[in-house]
Image (cartoon, rainbow over all chains, first blue to last red):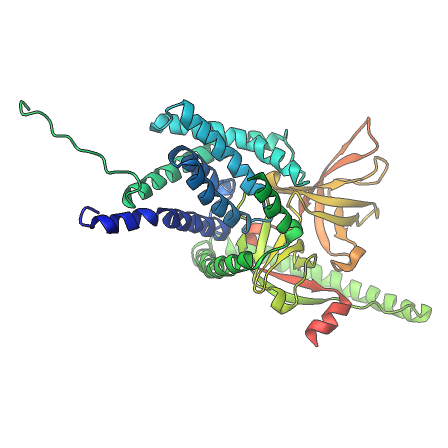
Length: 187
Length: 262
């Protein structure tokens, strides 16, 4: 991207939110249409959870909020859950990630994986509790909430999505390129 | 912020959609229709050309089953004729029949905690909220969101779904609700004294004229009596496998089917 003019770079950076939404849309289309071909062990994959955490950590409050509200609504329109449930559910995790980003430096790969693991476990209880607001009867203390495979799956795939979002930010110049400092002359 | 969220939820209550939602669903539905055709094509190719190892053995088993079913059909034809003759003698009013409209499944629910499907029929085909959806293997669910070209169906496996059913053998009545995480269902409001056994078959009722009466819904897999309460816990395996559904049928109630199909 070094060949671009500064106004072109700025334009590309402004399109970041659009590219991010397109990325989520591709994931939504893949998840909703691949049910017949992917093995059943992958059915428990939650697409938007790592996106909510990423936005919470790497975006300002209002920018992240706007992107997440739109993507949460897009997600809701592709689910039989009442519209609004997923918006509230992902907003809770977005605020959680904002707080974590404020008090902890959790941006190394290991800390991101730990954070995603914690959030995945928490999500098994937060969703049923959020669903109570909409009169939905998802059991909070069901043994299915302790499906360890689902937690591992969401942590692993969540980390890959997190990395992909980081790459998207670098490609669209949302984050400044890393400065490469040359070694001293003695080397 | 809270007010905006409250307004947003209020606008979308009970499956209502705005013109923006209809636009988004039309665009995503179009893509989903294309991708699901591609996915089903890939699956059919794999199933038909690569996984033919046990085909001959399976064919022989099915041939035996067909012969058995053929003899059963013949004896049932006799019962049907006898039933009709007796109805004529008693001058019972002939029941109006429902009409069916086929639809293709274009997408599954994107969330792992809810189990809905999207079909390629919408309000322009006469689809309305609350309509029943069935498959040749059993009851699928009810329409819960309608746009012009696509509709979303809440399947029997969804935790929000509630369907009136009866046990075929004992005629005990209950409400079937989904448990998405286990991909199974539970039968609610079944009295402790009601006669329900493992392997009992559950069929639909004509309550609300949503589904055809006597359609297969599921099979009882476990009955756990509650020694303290007045109800018992009944686990049910649904007759349908939602990830294998390709085509379903919308059930038009008798009066509405006259309007749509004329």
